[in-house]
Image (cartoon, rainbow, N blue to C red; front, side, top):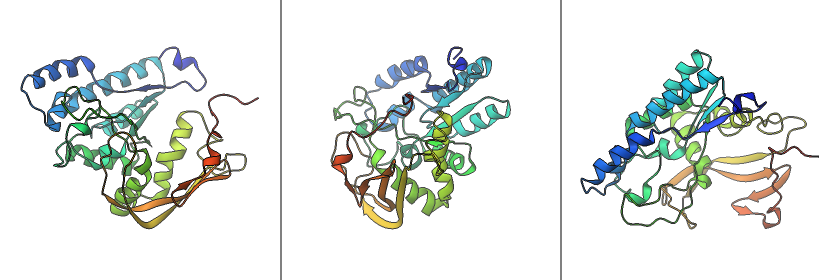
Length: 277
């Protein structure tokens, strides 16, 4: 953090869990013989994440280092960020669609829904949505992990799920339609705020002269059913969602339309963190 604080665009991103506590509690839960998904959540309870968030915020405060807290799953996360900002700490808080739409106690989920940090309860879901709506959560990530799951023992199963393809439909359905999330707020969560945090403005994150022409056009009334065919575990197969992207433009070029990608556009990406000559 001391070294990152010296960089012009320096920021440290942290996965916040107290690994020592989690290891201790995992051994205790494993000894019970339980194989249900809530057992995994109970082995990494909310206070394990909350303690780590508080600790890393304190270190950012001491060093003056900009901080990015990735994939927050606890409802207390937004409050901790607000309190830190009130003291002048430069902290950005991210969450993911699975923490906004799923709990460890959903009857259709099993060990293949194992994630780190874990899915939590409905109270945590409500707390995170409050943070989305009031602005205390700054960004959305997907934490997309396309592992092939073992499909067996809870404790040896690989953690991670896939959600990148449905992040926008999930937020349109559960955020815009069900909770009244303004589209402008969703754009800030998905585009403007990440670009600002990681020093990519004004090239990315805005519609302006000189910026890359990166656009996604959505049909707010389109209804489609999630159907996952790739690697990894989807938590949404069979869900009907309202609101889907219909046109994607990258640097002024149409790269996908009506669900069909332009194969000729493959390989045209650029690493925006490396200065161009």
